[in-house]
Length: 259
Image (tube, rainbow, N blue to C red; front, side, top):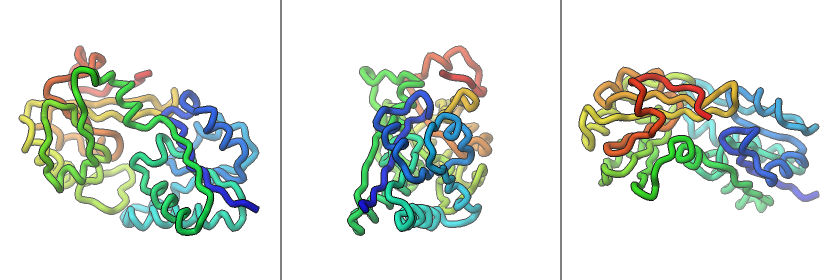
């Protein structure tokens, strides 16, 4: 019997962003895997008989993230001993900043497993849509925050800078819901090599349902170290010349409920 793995991107808002291809793949699955702290929004909208197994429990505080990624990817590969069609749901695009999916792709090639990639709306797409970054007037620069801090790349500070995974700077271990002060200070010092202390940053944490809406916090770079507790999730955005309309009349604060 043919063995297949489907890496299914269902967008950043599960119920609204799912594609027909994603629904078709999910409907025929023998088992569905996901890796999220809360999967109630998934179970609510899935109309399938296949069991849903959440692999988030493999994330243990203090463990190397690289080890966790390997354990999860091998767990999914090994499940083919029992199932024929395995689906991994990914909140976004499977091959955009998703190490587990990248490892599964490598192993599937090595083992000659039939692998299908079902694209979804990536977090980069969703951020552009939420903030309405005027790409006809400006460009964006994208880095993983840790790489940005380590490499100190030459960037055009007139572009809009997006830093993914800001809570992982100088850390290779799992830190569930927490970030070290050292990491945020390193990030702040790196940004101050390019920007002034008064320049603004915002952190956007994309929601996945009406019960968990998108949230934005923002402030000056000089105050970044005061927001350690927020940096465990979301994307950090820094811009000298552009600011989204939704924030122009707000004080440095939290903005919730963006649609």
